[in-house]
Each structure stands twice: as structure tokens, then as C-alpha cells.
Length: 175
Ligand SMILES: CC(C)(COP(=O)(O)OP(=O)(O)OC[C@H]1O[C@@H](n2cnc3c(N)ncnc32)[C@H](O)[C@@H]1OP(=O)(O)O)[C@@H](O)C(=O)NCCC(=O)NCCS
Image (cartoon, rainbow, N blue to C red; front, side):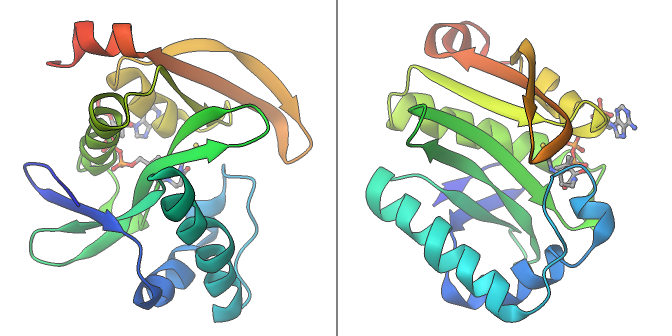
């Protein structure tokens, strides 16, 4: 469990499935993610059981559920290990009604701290479609650095990569 000034970040639980389903039904939320709208609860259950839970079991990281301290479920934010490239990716996705309050930045700062100070990672990357200006703004506020554009069939137009190393993080962690 991670705690920030306004938020609690905890590993996802089975009962988060309904929130996840609702989140992944909103075309505005999915617009720049490359993902399709969830058709049913089973899709959301599969995301949890096939992707989210194994990440925590195998790599001590994953997408955390993000809640206010009043228990409002806002979305998710967290780290994900890519076995093919051995990279660790920072990601976030919030219900539209909670955008624009600084929640993504606050939650992502806690995830960078967890990655570098607890897991002792050397580098964390993030990817965003070039049109996703609000996501890129979050990465810039986190002091992550632009590291190029990649083409990928899953992301029409490709995606930009941002990254931050443990050394860079330790120089700017009190931003
Ligand atoms: C991306 C996302 C997580 C941002 O969440 P959020 O809680 O609104 O983010 P924050 O409030 O911490 O910061 C957003 C910043 O983007 C800025 N912003 C919003 N729309 C923008 C736009 N069109 N162009 C440039 N900046 C924009 C905001 O002003 C804010 O910056 P500021 O604090 O300097 O004012 C949220 O929009 C979301 O869930 N989107 C759908 C899922 C998604 O795209 N995830 C990322 C995939 S890479």
C-alpha cells in the first residue's frame, strides 16, 4: 500500500473488477491508449487474472488501484514489467470525472518512489500516444525525459517514450 497526501494506492483486488469494467467502457478514457472498449465483466476479470495479479506475484509491482482517503475509486496507476525488453513501464488511467485534479501526477510520483527506493530499479519508462497531451504533460511534470518515437501496430501513429533513471530521480525527487 502506498500513501500520498490525498491518495491511497493498493494492489488490485478481485472486487475492483466492476470499477475496472466501468473505466474501460468509457471511449474518452480509452481514446489514446490503443485499447478497445470492454464488452463485458469477463474482459475486466481477464485483465486482472492474466495481467495484474501475476505482475504483483512475480515482480512485486503492478497497476495499483488509486483511491481517495474517503474511499472513492479514481482509477489505476502503477508499474509494469515487460519481460521481452526487461523494462519497467509507468502507466495510469483515471475515470474522466476525476481528471484535472493532479491525481495522476500525485499517484505516479508515489510509483516512481516505490520503483526507485523500494524495488531499487535503475530505469523506469513510460509510453504515450503523441496526441495524448495530458498524459505527456504528466510525464513532463514527473521530470521524465523524452527518449524518442516508436512505431507499433497497437498504437496508430506510434508512441513517444519518456524515461527516468535512478540517478536522475534522486536529483529531482523533491520537485
Ligand atoms: C492522462 C490522465 C491519467 C491524466 O490524469 P489527471 O489526473 O487529469 O492528470 P493531472 O491532473 O495530474 O495532470 C494533467 C495535466 O495535463 C494538463 N492538460 C490537460 N489537458 C491538456 C491538453 N489538452 N494539452 C496539454 N495539457 C493538458 C493539465 O492542465 C495538467 O497539467 P497542470 O497540472 O500543469 O495544469 C487522464 O487524463 C486519463 O486517465 N486519461 C485516459 C487514460 C490515458 O490516456 N492514460 C495514459 C495512457 S499513456
